[in-house]
Image (cartoon, rainbow, N blue to C red; front, side, top):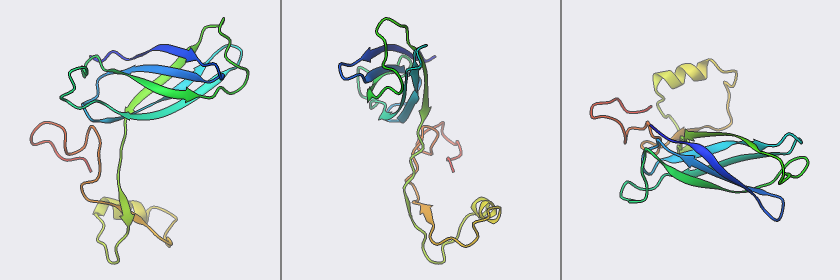
Length: 155
């Protein structure tokens, strides 16, 4: 079971905040998106969005069950400044990141049936250009590089 939390938030001298998020339960080398917001009752808000890969499997300091602490670089505060005397509430999420490389559609390219059906349902029937995914470029914790033997690849 993963143990994820926000163990610390720091108010920096320039008024920005640095957010520390403990992220667990992700496989080694998996890009993970950490996002959310920190707020105070005064109306001060700091929204964040950061992507970082989990360490490689051979990293002795990484325990996939406990995780690692992701340090979100300094985030600007919107509204009144954070008040050091007031508590902070942080709502944070950590999710697998889908990374896909796309190249300009080749003339006469054959699209798979689910994609053809989706295109047929859109109002954009006369695009100026289109990009298609590069075979094998997709990466996700649920991608074809992961999972039990015999599991179907991600599409």
